[in-house]
Image 1: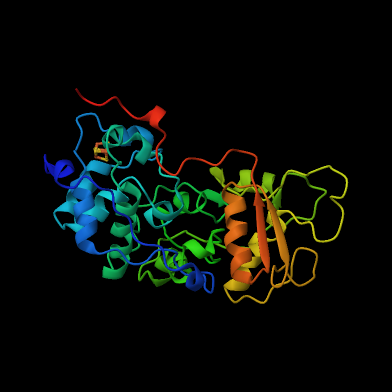
Image 2: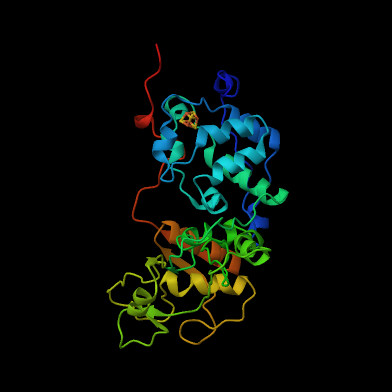
Length: 335
Ligand code: SF4
């Protein structure tokens, strides 16, 4: 059970500091500095283990948040990763990339800053990797069913990971500056390093799959349906929405998906050509305008800075969100 007075002792939310801008734009490493373990445990102590934990309601995965918060408070990190992995195959991804709807849902957020749930999640999984607690989990027995998983991104790996955490192509998360390559690939290495790889699991990359027979494809969708008991479609949304306005055809105007995946491969050290067979687009020495301020726009922003753009302007249709929770969404003070 949680410390019943933790949120009264530690009223302030603390997060790791960001590395200085002039340093972090020169590399693709984590934006944040390391976080002192004592502070993480202090922050976990703020969790009230609510009778009705609304953080559960906010989390699409149903993560057992108060349970692992309390385990972190007590320093029981190994137990914490067991509870975290019970509902979440890849906290190393969600701890960095999830928009954390659990935090606006946190009951403590009604009249204080919410618990730093996402940061605690990240600290648990990072420690688990450091300690060597993240291991392949081969199944006890096979069901005899065959499953094809199409896609090797964050949506494609979970269906694969329960029977086997292996994959031969590298995961291409689109946010290299938020996740070091070594950590990103470690999930893939899991399977390769397994002394006892699960039987019947095969993972290959670089295939084109389509239901349109006239297109040049490696595998027809019908073939997958005929050969497997189930097919999971977990491909990324690499098709973009066209912008049919005058000037769209001019040189130097690119869609994000013509740019980001190749930029990631280049920073991984791959020698690749872009989708048109030419060297990949780079922002080095360019004046850049980014239209769009969502996740994709943010990824472009981080990438063009790291590639050495001369200047960057970003335009977003929505008003700038407040830096802190809007007053209109706070609870009323208790008389
Ligand atoms: S809602 Fe907040 S305080 Fe309550 S259990 Fe969840 S994380 Fe802890």
